[in-house]
Structures are given as C-alpha cells and as structure tokens.
Length: 213
Image 1: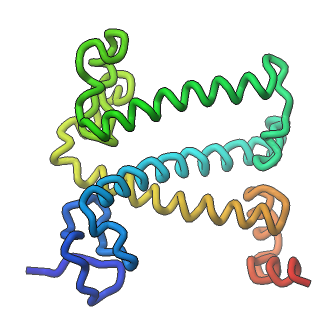
Image 2: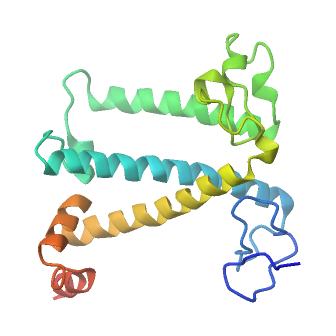
C-alpha cells in the first residue's frame, strides 16, 4: 500500500489526521486538532476563510485590472473603503452588511451545531428546500447550488480537495497582496506591469531592498 502524501515527506502524521478530511496532509504541528470537536470547528473555519480569500483575490484582481486598463475609475482596493457612494452613506452600508452577514453567519453556525436543522420546515420562511445543505459547510438547493455540482457530497472528495487547495492558495495570495500594498502602495496589477517592464531589475528583492533604505 502506497503511503499517503504528507506536507513533509516521510512524516508520520498524527493519528487524528487519518486522511479522511479533504486536503488532509497531516499538517498540525501545534496539535490544535487533537480534540475532535475543535478539529470539526477548524475544518469549517478554514473552509469559510478559504472562500472569502478566493472572493477577495478575485475582486481585487478584477477591479485592479479595470482600473489599470482605464475601463473604470474604480479606486485601488485599499482605498475603496474611503469612497462615498451616492446612493447611500457609509453608516447605512455598515449596518446593512452587519445585519445580512450576521443573519447568514448565524444560520451557518446553527447548522454547524445541529446539522440539517436549517433545512427543516418553517426555519426559513418556507424557502428551506431552496437552501438545503448537502452537509455542514456545503450549501445546496437551487439557489446556492444551481448547477447541481457535487450533489452526491459523500463521493465528492475530488471537488472538496480542489476547493480547499484553491482556497489555501488564495489565503496565501491575499496575504501577499496585503504585504505588497503595504510596501509598494499600489495595486497588484500595477506591480505586475512594473515587473514585466523590467523583469531583471523590478523584482520582490529590489522592491524590499529599496523600501528598507
């Protein structure tokens, strides 16, 4: 039997990371997932952060591309929060976001505590079937899974693996974008254009060296 891949070749993963979780490569140097309930929570937390990171990276790159190409006058992503919108004020936007996201996150947490509880009749204004989850962390129904992807969630290991791998990559990418913005004070597309204009002299090494001088 071929040994399963681990984050460090030859490593003997802890017993509680037995390879059944999507994207499990035995990485838990601090032993945070030793408690089964804690591990269950960390799995969901990583999944949510991964999805937010993928949305964030996509939004930053698309809006930055529109700005750099001149197709839109969208501000660079780290200045977008200071923009005053004509249709409403900042306080209203914050309140609406807190209410909507608070409601969604509460429903998600309730489904985590009691799987399937949010699909019971009367739990969501008669629309339960439209949001019925496949399992905690994987919403379904025609509204959240219109293409019917991975309907057989128990056998959807490959789809889960692809999602968590892309999500982890996005979390690293968003961290890089944060650092890049802090050091260069421009967007990622600006940095890419500058690098391509002079690939041998416009690199992360020269950028960090010049920022420290």
